[in-house]
Each structure stands twice: as structure tokens, then as C-alpha cells.
Image (tube, rainbow, N blue to C red; front, side, top):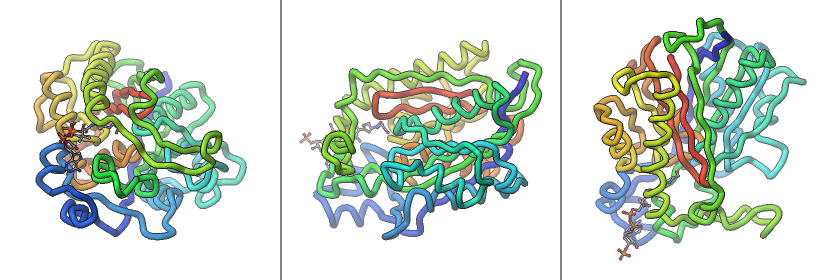
Length: 323
Ligand code: UT7
């Protein structure tokens, strides 16, 4: 059975850090409120002129180096983003021009905060179908450009960044002991589109717009949907919770992460948490968390990783991966 093995990870964060204390000088908020309600202490903000593709390319270079491959070895590029450089062409095409062979396919996936899990499922299916052997998958966002910096309910929650993985085809036995992506599960429910959305776009206002969110409602759905998709992933592989070495979740809110671990009965020390330093970087948050924990030695080869995310749409999903 063909498996998609994560051959290398990489990430990039813009240099500028915006702390909660900085934000308290801009809107009516406080470090105490933000930390208590979300667990966020700081976020990175892209420099003027620094684009999503710039972040994506910087993360990609590191993932290629970690995988020990060259750009010329890539045969598919997928970029998960809700903040592309332009409405079109896809940000993935910019990445292709910067570091890969002309002619290979490249496209963006748009599932907001679930984008990396959607991108991973897409890349895995290309590899399983034999249509790709080496895929560069990136989650990259510049959410600072679509924040309403006067809306304290949203502007304190998001940040900019990018994370990347190189996926390589490998032969497996078709058991959970295989290295690589073991399963992916994706969901959406568009009835809730007005709970988390951007109030602009090409076919409506012709402007990029700003994020609007009914935070409490999103929180309520996130806790339920994430617990369900995590259990779905374990059941599909006939694995117990105790088999998980690391939960690598989308980083929206520390309380959501704690609740998911609690509902699962998972030891909280097995949850990779970066929301305190990165805030919510949407599609970039899982690969950023993954690269952080690979880089500091927590995640090791052979570990079983459970990735999960929920975002606007609503969209949500999970992936079980043996690293
Ligand atoms: O990545 C996609 C998924 N997104 C999420 O998962 C986000 C989910 N939602 C959340 O994380 C939480 O709902 C928030 C962190 C957004 C908010 O936490 P909450 O405990 O649900 O607070 P709330 O929205 O109910 O607001 C409580 C109070 C309100 O005041 P009143 O009405 O009680 O007087 C808000 O006006 O806090 C006020 N508030 C603030 N106060 C200080 C809202 N934002 C702020 C702020 N600073 N930045």
C-alpha cells in the first residue's frame, strides 16, 4: 500500500512580535483578558510588503532542507491559505516559480483553519493514486491583513506565519504500524457560514474584507466537532487513545485544546501547544506546531500523531500520521 511519509518539516515566522501589552495600547483589552480567555500571549505580524507567498517560500526552503531534497524533486505543490497574495493566480503558483520545476501542478486549498488537514488529505490522495511521488504541502497565512484592528473581539486572536511539510511516497503494509499518513477525515457544514467569515470578496464587495466571528458559538461547535473527529480517526484505525504520542491540533484557543484532551482522556502533556506564542495562524498553525515539536526533539520518528482542526465554513477534520 502506498503511504505518504512526512520526509521533512519547516516553518517561518515574521520577525515582528506583537504582544498583548502592545495590543492593549491599540484597543480596549488587557493581557489578563486575552491570556485567560484564549491562552495567547503574543503573535507574529508580517512586515509591510511581506506576502503570504514570501512566508510560504521561506517555510518551504526549510522543509526541503530537512527532507534532503531539491526543489526540482517536487512533483506537486499544495498551499493551504485563506489569505492568498491575490484573488488569483494561486499562491501555490508563486511558490512553484520560486523553487520548483516549471510545468508541475500547483494549486491552493481554501478551508480556512482546516486548510492544512484538507491539504494533507488532498496530497495523500494524489500520492495514493500514483499521481504524485513528492509533494510540497504548505499552510501559510497573513491574517493581520484581514483583521479589523478596531474589533477587540477578533484582532487579539490571530497572527501570521507559515509551516511546510514534504510528503514522499513509500510502501507500507497497510497496518497502523506503517510510517506515513494512516487516515484522513474531512467534514463541512455550510449552514454555519455566518458564524466565522470575512465580510468581503470578489463576487460581493470586490474588496478583501475583514474577519467577523461569533466567538462563543464557534467555540461551542469546535469543542463538539473536534472531539468527534478525533474519535472517528481512532475508530477508523482501531487504535486506543493511549496509542497517540502527540496531539498536534489547530491552535485557536488554549481552552479548546484542553477541552479536546480532556474529552479524549489524553494526558495534557501530549498536546503540542504553540497558541501562546503564535496565536491563531489559521492553515499555518498545525505545520507550525508540528515543526516546533520536531525541532525541539519532542516528536520523534515512529511517533503516532493526531492532527485536527476546525474553521470557517464550518470545516473540520483530522489526520492520523505515523511520523
Ligand atoms: O480558528 C477558527 C476557530 N476559532 C475559534 O475556535 C475561536 C473560538 N472562540 C473563542 O476562542 C472564544 O469564544 C473567544 C476567545 C473568542 C472569546 O472568549 P469568550 O469567553 O467566549 O468571551 P465572549 O466572546 O463571551 O466575551 C466575554 C466578554 C464580552 O463582554 P460582556 O458582553 O460580557 O460585557 C466581550 O465584549 O469579553 C468582552 N471582550 C473583550 N474584553 C477584553 C471581547 N473581546 C475582548 C477583548 N478584551 N479582546
